[in-house]
Image (cartoon, rainbow, N blue to C red; front, side, top):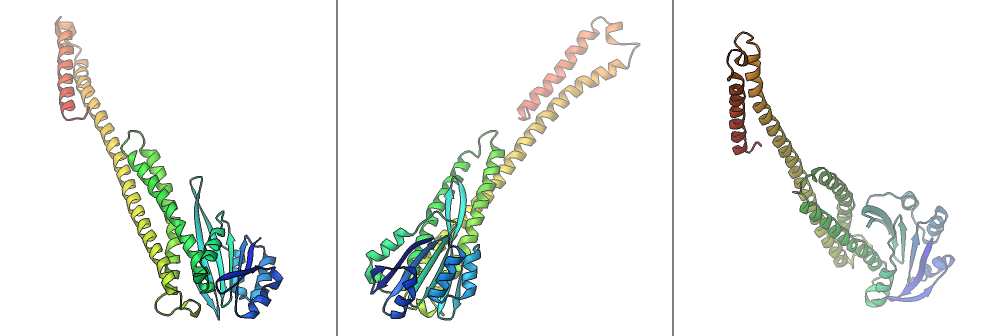
Length: 321
């Protein structure tokens, strides 16, 4: 679906143009065209391929989607894949933004994402002195918007982790805590798979061998890289904390089980004493206390009670009961 199609000259918008006029504006050489698509159909991508002269392999990647973040060069044009991330009802939803860039055009194709980039276009149009840098600045603005939207996701994951930590030492919550920690770990892993390749790709756009399209915009992409570096460090910190929290919960479960085992062992020891006395006297039918001695039965009960009481007190002092 076509969202926007506009031509720009010297950093200022000159017209919203129909798709069939794209090639004529590109041919002018003194302006560039910025087109935005959402969930593009194969027929739409094929039209864009013809208008912009896009490489068929890049178009095929955009059509199939589910690409890892990357930066690829195709002669004088480039193909960039950026992953969008958003939290929808507590679940992490990953979308994709494919960007085709040439000397005088930018084509962005958004897929599987509820996020829009109308604000990016409005921001760029408010800064004609920056937009005059051409398509490279548009790519920076799009990547910067995507990366900035990672920060709220990081904050939400950190808040979820803090909530779990607050409940960590509550009784009878170990199982639910472990389940939530594993769910959180999966979210962090997904985010890690989004950020790490993108950070590597952004590193190709400044310093060292930089594609000609980005030679004069390296500082902007260095800023994107710095943001990704901070996000990556936050992800690593959350992962370490989650792993530690899982170990703590498992240790607490083991401690609780140990306490139960101690209690069972203590009660078993107490009743074993009574059982031992009863068993010994039960085998002696000739001189049983309650037969030959009228105080034998009460004495046996007092003796068993005394020994069991003594063991109970000792186990209480040892905190087994």
